[in-house]
Each structure stands twice: as C-alpha cells, then as structure tokens.
Amino acid sequence: MSKGKFGYFDPKKPQAGRITDIGPNYFGQMLPPVIRRNYGKWASHRILEPGLLVHVSETGEKAFTVRAAAPRLMSVEHIREICDIADKHCNGYLRFTTRNNIEFILEDEAKAKALKKELDSRKHVGGSFKFPTGGTGMGMSNIVHTQGWVHCHTPATDASGPVKATADVLFDEFKNMRLPAKLRIALACCLNMCGAVHCSDIALLGYHRKPPAIDDDAIGKACEIPLVVAACPLYAIKPVTTADGKKSVTVNQEKCMYCGNCYTMCMGLPLADREGDGIAILVGGKISNRISMPKFSKVIIPWLPNNMPRWPEVTSVVKHIVEVWAKDANKYERIGDWAQRIGWEKFFEKTGVPFTEKSLDDYRLAVDTFRTSTQFKFTDHAWAVSKAVGGI
Ligand code: SF4
Ligand code: SF4
Image 1 (tube, rainbow, N blue to C red):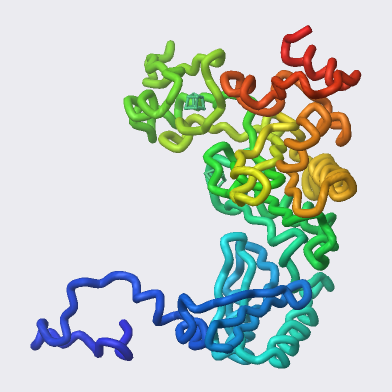
Image 2: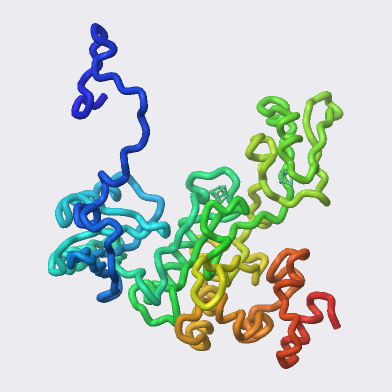
C-alpha cells in the first residue's frame, strides 16, 4: 500500500485521511510543464525531420517532440527502458499516440536531437532497432494492432507477427517522408476489430472461414447452454441431447458467419482453424477531412493464408499497393482519395488485384460504392469488374 500519498491505514482512526471519490488523476497534472504552461495557446507546428516535431506557442515557447515506434505488446523490461530514457532526457515525461508511437516531449532542440540519436542507437540483441525514430508526416506511422495469439481467444490471425513482417517491408517509409500523404496501417485479428481497421489506409483483418467445432464433452461440463444459444446473432445454435444423453448444441453451418461470439461464451465451440483462418485486406479508410470526407476501409482481398512466421502473401500485397499508390497519386492524396479520383475499377486495374463479388462493401451497400456515373471509359478491366458483380 502506498504511504507516499495517503499514509498507512490506521485501524484505530479509520476515518483519518479517508477519501471516497477515487478516480483517475486530473490529466493536466501529467502534462509536461511546457505543455501545461501553453495549453490552448499553440500557434503552429512543423516537422523538422522524420521523427522530430516542433510546436510553437503564442508565447514564443517551443515544445520539441521525438517520435519512436513501439511494438504495442511490451515486456515490463521494455517499458522500464522507455521510462529510463524519459527520466534521462525529459524529466520522465512521455506519451503514447493512438497508433502506439512513443513521444518524448522536450523544451530544447539540441537535447531533442541528442535523445533522437540515442533512440536510434539502441538495438535488440539480434541487431534490429529497439526504438526507431520516424513515423511523422508523409510517411508510415507505427502500425496499430490488437492482441493476437498472445492474448485473445478469438483471433483468426496473429497480431504482432504479421505487423512485424509488414513493418519490416515498409520500414523505409517509416523512416522517410516521401509518400504522397500519410500512410496508416492497422491490424485486427478478428471481426471484433479492436484495432482501427475500419478507417485505415490499409487494414489487415483476421477472418475465420469455418464454423465452430463442437466438443460435446466440454459443452456439457463447462457451458451454460441457454447463454450459448442466445449469444449467436444469427440464431444458428440449437440445444440438443446427444445419442449418449449429453446436453450439447448443434450449429447450422449455412447460417453461421464465423463471428466467434459462441466461443466467447463457451470453450466447447472453438473456432480457430489452421486452414480456415487467414487475413482479409481492406484499403481506403481514413478519418481526415482533407480532400474528401472520412471513409471506411473497403475489402479488396477477402482472404490470404496465415503463412507463419512472415506472412509473405500479405506483406507482398501491402508493399505493392503502397508502391503503386506512391507512384500514381497526387500530392496529399491518401489511398482512399486516390482510389476515389481514379475510380475503384482503376484501382483494381493498376494494382493487379483481382476483383470478385466479395470485393469492396457488403452486398447491400455496394451499389453506393461502385461508380454509377457515365463519365468513365469502359476498359477491359472495368468490364471485368462489371461482370464480377453480376452486370453485363
Ligand atoms: Fe480478440 Fe478480435 Fe480484438 Fe483480436 S480483434 S484482440 S481476436 S476481440
Ligand atoms: Fe453463431 Fe457466430 Fe457461433 Fe457462428 S460463430 S454459430 S454465427 S455465434
């Protein structure tokens, strides 16, 4: 029990120092002093070099931010090392961005550059960067992801594994700012989408393709069958009594959409499957208002295999899309803006990704997404797109 803040509990004086309204501390207490002093007064900001930003206040004060990548799932030792670096260089102040970049905030440019140098010099035992700086401006930010096989119970793919493999093939885009616009990549390991998959430029989404297996023994011993039945959003589960008298369930495979809700309720309905599970790729999402309104990501590849440990099918597609976009897009065009300007049929043509009836949106919304204007030329690829969706 902490004695620093409230003192030890004294059973003879139970009311002494008693507090009843315990919540999170006021966030302002945790802001670096330069941020606290200039709260609401920031006039401008610039990126001095990849991984180093400066914010200038109306008062003339400046805050220098050094940004480095983080692995999202961290060991205690790794977090302690981050804290030690912050203690050494910036009085212990640091923050994490929504994409899990680590940001150290300083008041002095020379000190910020020294910190950046030190971060880039720290390596893992295998020689890879521990805290590579970058992720700013017209480049790739840290890849945000979910728990994966390390922790969660419903993943259709790993999180850290494919993200590391993807980050490796795009590492130069994290260190440089040479793309047409920001590049945000995300991974969620199942359709629950704990990651920012619905609104990222490129999203990797774990996808099950098989209904749950049924373990009668485990269901009978460990599960509340009415809860399992109620958990299914498609009413695909029914209670049954097996031939040998066990209480269990059946799953209507035609109805099942492989969401994994039933497994959340009952360990007797495991969904993970080496052949069935894989990754869908979505592109074009964003939350910025620049050029066009915020957009949801759209499915362009419904499934790729979980080819551990480096997911080559996934990383090669992601890299290729980034290369085609970087070459073809106008300045400031995010991938979704670019695809919208050239037309989604051209997106598939230029990237060489096959268009199928499973591409883009779900079936009800697809008509809104397809170009319904007569203002484009029917190339061979556009005819193929038309045929794939059941047109002429
Ligand atoms: Fe678990 Fe799905 Fe979230 Fe991944 S996305 S952590 S599998 S709930
Ligand atoms: Fe129902 Fe989802 Fe379980 Fe399929 S995976 S049976 S849709 S709860």
